[in-house]
Image (cartoon, rainbow, N blue to C red; front, top):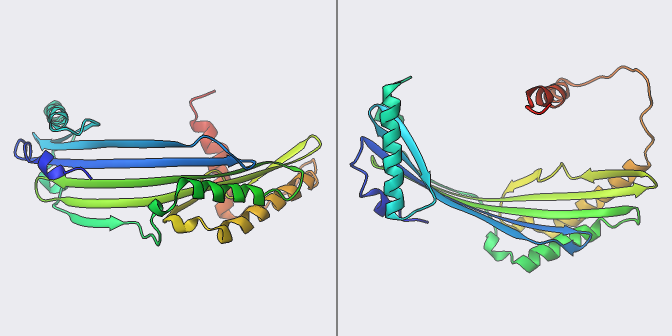
Length: 259
């Protein structure tokens, strides 16, 4: 975690209120298709947001240059934005909008993600892929995991001090069954729909493999199922399903900018 105190000290009295927020997000992606490991990748983003209150307005700037010179440049840019905003104010704020809050939060984990090595994670995903091989009709078996580790620290010139650490795991499983010219794919709640704020204890063969086998068998049921009949007929939808259908079938197409 970056030492925000030393970075804030040179600028903390240069405006009515100054805040620094450090943010680090490390995302590791691992994927196995038909028991074959695909290239893994790590996406790591680190930066600091500078927030300034002056002239009755708040100004913001962000930078990936976390050196003192980088913070100073970002501070000057945020301060300039408060001057511009004060010429055309919609509201006039006070420092009361930034109370001296203090607190800490950390995801509850039983086993740290550091305890899960790359080879072990891939081995578990390979076993998940193999568990979906319940028939020669299952042509594609996908098992993937995305691990996201987030650290944030916010510090303010009035004593604000908030630290947070998140440990998140996204799992995706999919099986595609093919019978003649018909193909059906069954997923476990959709891409990355299995999202947990958890540690490496989620990577349990005892927990994952049975679900992967069920998933593949459901794909077989789909590919052999009868087609829906043609014609007009009544449809009964529960209110929550109706609202979801309107959202997906009407909301997204009508709000799209692509025609």
